[in-house]
Length: 329
Ligand SMILES: NC(=O)c1ccc[n+]([C@@H]2O[C@H](COP(=O)([O-])OP(=O)(O)OC[C@H]3O[C@@H](n4cnc5c(N)ncnc54)[C@H](OP(=O)(O)O)[C@@H]3O)[C@@H](O)[C@H]2O)c1
Image (cartoon, helix red, strand yellow):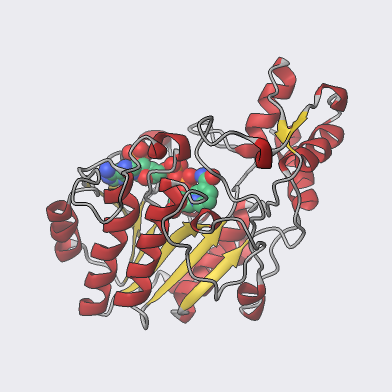
């Protein structure tokens, strides 16, 4: 990260970046790694209240168009990085309408529609009009899981039973960014992000560790293809994207695919925890009423970021680093 800080200090001399979602699992890593230099954060919670430094904080409900408009009008910034989303996949599913084109689909400040579909559009429209550069975070859940791992050229799938409402709304947000700001935006798709520590929110890997230690592991899918994202790779990629104003879609994910079950076997074995407590299940056999749909054959291919000179971390190496950093705490 020392190289990143050097690059960032140079970049932040002349450019200010507005970070939306500085308190998020993924965004907080980037903000902490840059030590907040040149960063204006905006959102509901001041990141400084949880010891994440930023140059400036502006309070705003980003699910409200008027608040977003005022923020973008007043904020002194050259680029915007958007980590804000409603990410609770099963919670979002409760908002799923029968027909997504119906005006009755849920809206309002905190809905998946407002935060995942509309906010990116407001940001992209403003970026196109002002010349600001926009980086927008997205997910492999925009795909229906019939043909993954997916490459960067793949378009989000349409509304249907295999795509969760979370994934569909994120796909609508992506399309808006591509449509309105094609020459001044990048979309960064990630998949099952994990990091070594963040007391504010557990992730996939740390949930498995906590449950394995507490003897409360749930059965893990043996048939779901995933490419977990080591969050520090996102932090490394952002300065590259911002300094180059790179446009298009970029995937940051493990170059080696795995399954939740195989990931857990590796994690527990390397952590010295008993693997015989692991039980498996099949996503393909899960009744649709139990949880929101997840991509069965999901995951992301990573050719785009390799062209930028970044090599994302294979999941086993990410797990080793996670355990090493936790042991050093
Ligand atoms: N987590 C995953 O498994 C996953 C997987 C693939 C892709 N992604 C994508 O990666 C990005 C970051 O995800 P994450 O898991 O790091 O997010 P997260 O931890 O769930 O954080 C969401 C962020 O959005 C902010 N937010 C929510 N509602 C808001 C509102 N009305 N006004 C202002 N701010 C609001 C939250 O602020 P508060 O602190 O105030 O709540 C928080 O900073 C998202 O685009 C997500 O779709 C995530």
